[in-house]
Image 1: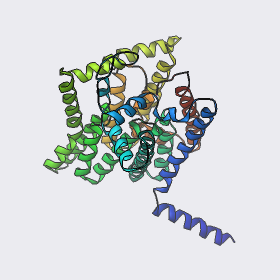
Image 2: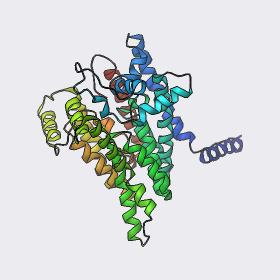
Image 3: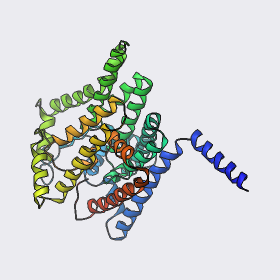
Length: 380
């Protein structure tokens, strides 16, 4: 009997090794089931389930997917007639394309797009981490990521799922020097979210490392590395053409959401308000916790972990860009694609404490999802 049991266990382990994707996919789906349960409970409390999928920025993306980038009448949340141009095109037009070739509506197509992109992205990142640090750290890191406090947006009409897919594809391609895939991922990332251009950082770090090792970068590698900032730059120029103002994109961001680079002044002031009590708003408190706990402490832990330099510099650039942003909301969401931070946390956390950290994060995710879907109005 003991021999038979050991044989079954050995067979199961072999199946997991051969079908490695079952682990990250299972973790991702488990996190979505938990979130669905939260939303179903809210639905019973008169907060419609469909509203959770397309709320907040999802409303803008839904409008873009249905009607394109059209002028709007000023009023309520519209501060610029072309305010929709603040949202980049890959996610809304991807949902529209799915709805055109399937019976699904735009919102349902967007939900499907988020789930599939997030699932594949987590699987790719699991493989990237597993190659360097082993399966245990990879599984713990991806579990922490998908159960992180703002990871509920991975099921919404938001850019985070697509960003995870593109970040995963980029880092996997960098590991294997598949520069054509690096270029495709960078191009799409630059047109997915404003911080997508940060993929240029790990690409340049890899190029410099190859050059120091005596390997001269090919033209394709250089072009692929610059794809993300070039794509984002093209969008800025397109917005400039539509608005008649070279800085039209940045003006829209500032007018609509107060997004601008202030060198970290607003972040320092927010941290001071939090530690001296009381914080100005719940959103500000949550943002500060994200920057300090996940961002700052995550960088410290990552520095003590043996990771490739491109991981480190990508994490530094992501945290720095979050800190210098004058808008003091959404810190947890901004950092979701920064997978090295989650790796740093799980790699330096004792194995016996990892379930506790993930459980606390999962409870925060459920709480945040509830608060963002009800009149409490926590900004995702």
